[in-house]
Amino acid sequence: MTLLVLAMGGVLMLMQRRSLQRMQTSGEHLYESVGEVYAATEEHLLNIKSVKTYNAEDRDLQLYGHLCDEVARLSVDNAKQHAASAFRFEMGSLAALGAVVFLALEVLHVPTAAMLLLLAIFTRLMPQLATVQSEMHQLAATLPSFNHVLAIEAECLRHAEIEALT
Image: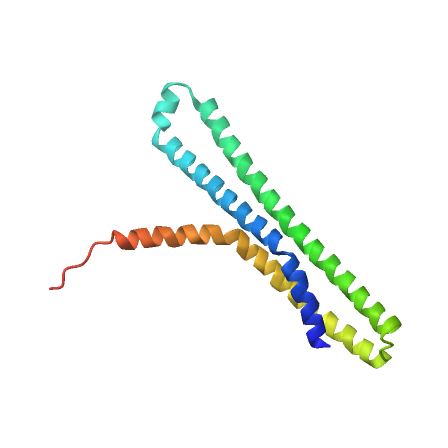
């Protein structure tokens, strides 16, 4: 029975692969957009005297506002994808449970005690599988940023000064 519930959860997770890829792509776009905001902030701070001299504050503010709006839009899209994926997983698990209960009762004539055991196992395992699925999506969204941090660290280590041994 436990293997049946785990198999159903595994099938549901396999069906979410495309959603995981979309979350990773969304995470990459969000990382790039946040990088653009940081670059615009740095540029603004470096050129603050020039901006004030030429009365370009409005243009600078519009650019920065546009970049922040893009980050907010991507964050909301990311959250929507995450929620939609969780919804699909929950609906899929309910459909799988309904199919198993129907087959067990109507076709296989499984005893009531075995059905109660199946339901108990389902109610214990499926929330845990849903949590794993949710964490996988969260990881897929943040993995691009982590990969960029690792690349920066590797670059810093390549250019590190070697201390002289004395």
